[in-house]
Length: 91
Figure 1 (spheres, rainbow, N blue to C red):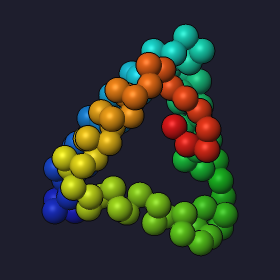
Figure 2 (figure 1 turned 30 degrees about the horizontal axis):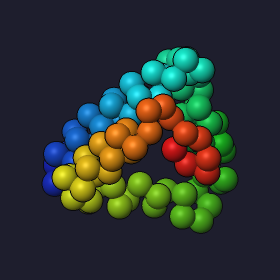
Figure 3 (figure 1 turned 30 degrees about the vertical axis):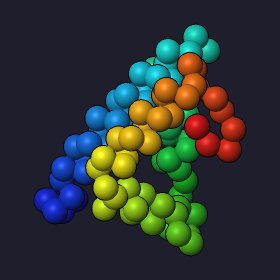
Figure 4 (figure 1 turned 180 degrees about the vertical axis):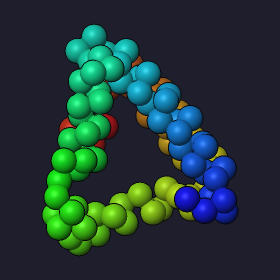
């Protein structure tokens, strides 16, 4: 990743850690099934043709260039509104 976005990458990693801790605080989750979930959602096991079809690779582009304070505020808001993870079409 470009040095231009290194601060955003660092912040994304920090907020990912916060979200991971939030998710595994639910007694129905642990580090192992969270890793399995991320693997499935990330398409790690998909073949290149399927993964590269359409806009799959552009999904995270907005996060790379997004305002750091806005991203951090969204994560904090998510955790404050819910005392445990709520699953639907997205977290």
